[in-house]
Length: 303
Image 1: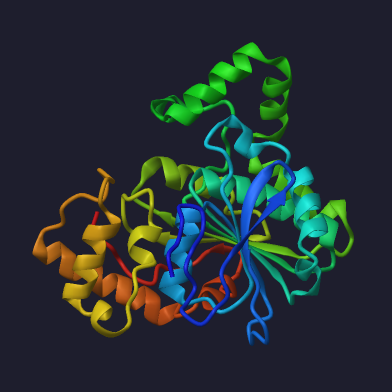
Image 2 (image 1 turned 180 degrees about the vertical axis):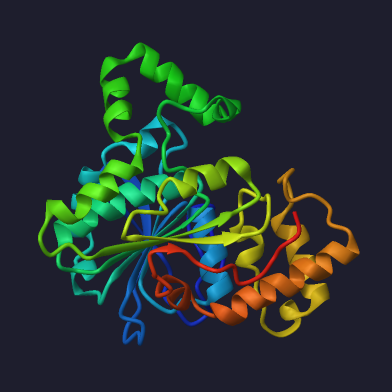
């Protein structure tokens, strides 16, 4: 089965994705008949969704949204949540809704998931984020090296409405603290996987460590895109050291931080990733490890 840039392959015997509109955004949805997994997964970032679903062989309904790579990706979460619920009735039938996002998509996914938790209460909503920023406004100086943050700042300087939105919605802390008070029966919990040795990511994640509905899983690495090695396939030939190394080279193509790794470090990286996958063999295993606070690291990864 061929996959486009904004779709993902979940297996040979499953139906093709179909394109739908979620408000102003394009999305891809795949519904499964008689699926044993009664959860519904919503991914922010189609390429990211492809990596996760292929790695974990998810056999459940999946929707992927490719939000624009511009300052608009963090706006309008209530409208997006309302459009999701009205456009995808299967969300209301699911056992729980699981939102997944990475980096800036993780921030957007947090805001959308919180809105879904309020609107769909008492439906359980679970959030899994890899290295998300917890505060995007005002941007830290180091963030200004990123073109997205430069465009966001430029737009805010030119548009008072945009600036007001960023000032009132650019921090996850008040959102998550207020969430239990917004609806008596809201059921929302989240887990963040983050590199402890990536100073900016760890600083951003640690701002959320005392919030009751947040769990932080630290990984001893300085990589930002921690899912690149946490989500490599670990079955069959791909689960061998050589298979792991080959996957790393493919996933790391074009990513300067996914640099060449010497053989001795690759062995340690492989060992650590295998320990991670042994502890969390499925996404549900990871998502249900939702004790508030900071979890013990499952393994130590080389920087």
